[in-house]
Length: 416
Length: 95
Image 1 (tube, rainbow over the protein chains, first blue to last red):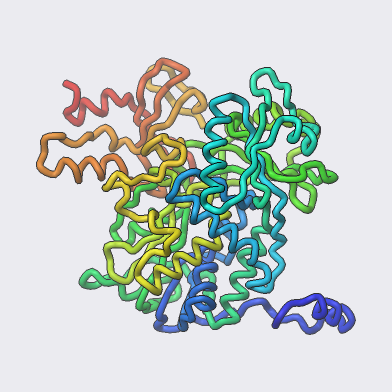
Image 2 (image 1 turned 45 degrees about the vertical axis):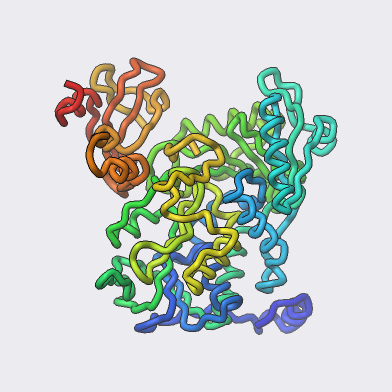
């Protein structure tokens, strides 16, 4: 069923009796050409592009819980392509371009809102670094603009620009950045994949791989064995747990990142503001809640909840830069588990096992990457060669000294 | 989270900084034939278990000792805290 304004009006007049489920609930078949493990944003996007762009048939997505129940529903919904390094910027700009056409592409309202993202500058050194970053973005076809304090004050009059510790001296803006309704991304990709014949199998946990003579022949699941010519893993957050079933050790640790939302307020934040020096960033949802977060808790965790010292730290950062928000009450907080890789960048690559492919290590930046990650992973699964924008995301970059370390902190996952 | 420091008693985890898997104590031998491979695995690969995990914490805002904390990554429960010095010595390092 194609969604349109006409359809909404027609259904309103017909008592909304004509809507059908957005995707099927199929039984797993004994064998597929391609099995994707993980029904989150990246897994569903991979299946969608496999079916739509790469014309593949007989695809399944296996999800241990329900689709969209993991990190795609736990992030702070920001999209942007304001990276510095060559290995990253073309990929994230590709992703942002896919976001721009996404709703028309999969015929679903994902509320893509390019309301702009602003990184605040407080020192000369930061200005140099952000100028360089802005130039790198422009060289890669993205948009970037350095704003003066006066321009920032006009857009965000309630920002604390005169703070003695962190006076705001300017900012790097990417006007094409913004926010997206994250659940709708999972649902839109799921519906688009399902309508092209992809089996989305929920409540189906992968418990092991069947590997013989260095080749992956399928997966053992809680709903029985499912054979596959190719298996793609897209379970960021639990990658180490899953890949240990194939006896693989990964260059990553799992960490928890917390996020917060305040009670609903009238429109106050026109875009996304990041206060990197104070470990705080914030936007306002269309429902009115201030959506904000900060750093990861900092130690290995698989508990989808965080601890209190980080809550205090994030709120202190928020109060330093937006004193007015101190009047708002916090409504909810939650945590998501992420693959924190050794250089802060992801991996989209083949493994040493034939027929087994890996997508993970997204750190806390996986949501904005969803479309390009799915597209590039689908490209890899079909062509056995990396997509041009993802060719740096290889397993062997650590061995070869080709790290993509945006922050320059080395192999300390909790510092990225 | 409270870490029961072997010398100082229970301390707030916010006083500590975190390094990672306590296997980092077992630095490879730089003169071994496979040193490059061993250092790659030592520096970059992690078991990253969901469950009990031995890890290194540094009491930065305290007595600046390194600890080996055995903690459950699913529940944040801590079952054992030792001085990293004692653990390293028991493994034959730093005589």
